[in-house]
Length: 393
Ligand SMILES: Cc1ncc(COP(=O)(O)O)c(C=O)c1O
Image (cartoon, rainbow, N blue to C red):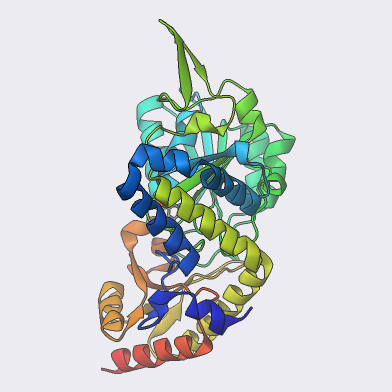
């Protein structure tokens, strides 16, 4: 990877150290151009006319996202963000009272709220499989739960928002496939930071967003939908005229492909930006991306562990790019502000972002630092020096 060239392709790096790719990364020039060019075209010839003009490029965006996930474009639905993808998938499952949703203690906060809402409205039971002593979901307990309880759905967040943990979604996929159990993976943080192959994972749904490690624009996301789902009668609860055809007074026909999960109105500029981001990542290679982000994150964890008052919070057999730490006597949100004044972007997590994980760790939240491949060792040194200063003061 030519880091200098990649950095020069990222205007946002000119004046800042950006260590917030788990929040929203920085778009590279081809992504910015794809979005801006289409907005300009819309302003010149009209929004509907611009969409027609760009239909080949839009088709290519689906191809590029599909290539990123190891699947074909007819299994990709574009959306506005990861949560929109996730709820479209959830809404397609015909839950009945007493059905079981099996998940983990580290699933994303909004997903946890949605499981609880399903429990509240439909009487669904939510079971969180315990963690293994080293962190991450206990795979034996997961297998036993799936085997004994035959859940309606297993839902797992690949990489949580609140720590560097990477869950073993492949092994859980095998458990689900063996027993023909529906499997939904939230890949919001993993897509763009490591190779993802939905066939290997064996999931039925994989939800993601564009703006994080993929380096796409805000306000865009996508959903992978398996053949098993498409060949069954599953469809989102509220399809619109894009997801289905109204073919008779009292009859509609769901789209045969993943478009069933889309709605009609789209910011096509953002879809084009998402495609450009997927192409950019595919060309760089997800294996070198993963290796570099993990090496930067490991270096950062090492340096943080030597700082006074700092405690690195990431636990698990496999750790990704997200680094979380608490600082005795320092509120994470205030650390973020003080770092930002120094030109360093990070983000903070409060207890409400992950009540289970942060209560287990005995902290009120964390400073979240999320390097991407465009960061350098000197970015990490700048962060450590700034934190040393702030903590000393
Ligand atoms: C693991 C995970 N899942 C889902 C989401 C929600 O993504 P979005 O805001 O695009 O809906 C986030 C956002 O931080 C996340 O970290």
